[in-house]
Length: 613
Image (cartoon, rainbow, N blue to C red; front, side, top):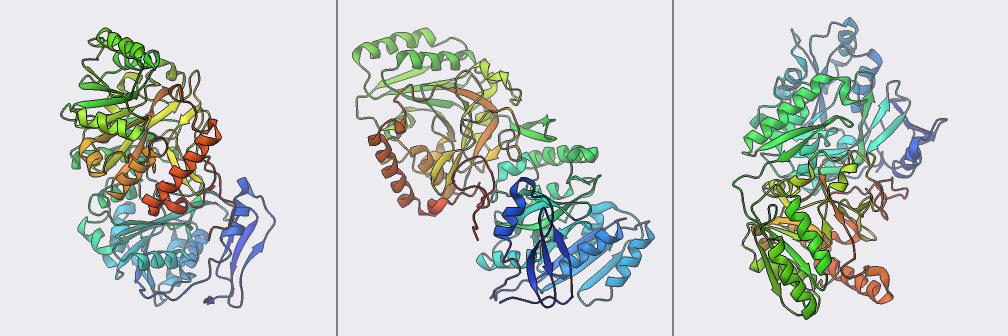
């Protein structure tokens, strides 16, 4: 059904070429003159034509929309309030909390709304800043859920309906967030859409990506005592860090439900607009690590004004590096020598699984192992020669059965740990810390598989920076792009959760590997790593790419490119079909770490310019 609104014109959202006009007699999207920045206007035209449509819901939760107010321009405050009043969903209240504004017009504007039946206005006697003001609103809330809104921002007209719809899909959710974009100070231009992943805890440790719109179960907010003072500027980040420690029931609506005003002094423009935010963010991260019993260091990435968390391995666990190899003694020697000479973490063993090298190559490998052992940090290399038909999964499983470590690192024999990658200034960690960083990350309770960037030789071109599960099948993110810029909200800079990581460099805690069933040996050549990562997700863990590490991958030196022949391509297609038969949840391109509003057939994070509703 289409629900009429109660005012002649409630509001107009102007964007680069489009505006939503809501009226008593007509609801339409109208073409305006303007600039279509980056194709976003065209995307809006394709995907927001039906945002005023609703269907009856069996469950209609009552929302309390809490809006802390302080010295905001009259027009912005009115537009904010009207954007909530104009919702297509009607079961809500608005609680406006004036934090002792010194601007007299604020009280005048609020006075015009406080007589409405679903609006309450609280006037604080003294300024307490945003955390106290928001908490006053939460304390007064009657709703089952609390939705937050800044007093100069705008809700999309379908914001609360989409949240209610999500709760109808899963009533256990305690926290729901949506996608968002930014709107110019004069309200005329929408731009910079942020199409977010589903709940991704390590992505969240990298930065506050959930942001707006955020809706919380009120009893959960009561349990954790709401927002904390002393974190102003990062109060919402600190709040969600504590929320994720209390619940795993977190949902995401992949629709633009919130428009963040780009005022000159706003963090919508840049984090550096408010330097105190940086200090509060550091404190929030440090206290989160302490609460969780984790050791870690924070590193500032000045180009994006964010702090990376690097976990420090605890207990000095043994890491088993498992390397499948056959008839490649020189390549294997390069790999082993680079490990010995460029690794600061010294509690590891290497397990080489050879599925049938010739006698000449076998002897060459056996002769070189004593030469490499006890050089650098290398202590022990175990070599198992077991002739059999090539099956990468079986070789890895055999290696795991012979390994003694609590953590397993599966590594291709054509991987090189090389100082040459430091030509890329995006890498914040010394090259030799690669193994300790992977191990520290793998120890985190919610982490599944851990991977890192892999470059092609002689440059900084990506061979691997995470695997996306696209509708056309699994594919490498940012494939063959150069690691010299900031791709889509720091996808190659910050540490991100990904659906899968390549088996060319994949670390996982042994007990999680075993619980996931190890490598599925029905995938002899292709998609064995993806299948393992799918299994880890199905068990409740989150796979991670550490973007502070880059190794060199001399890809396909070992066995050639999968697509080098028609026969290999046919085999790949068969294994992809089998992958989705065994993991049907991921068929049709489902990827919890990717957004359906992004392009479905390549990994460059451009907009999906088809109507995907």
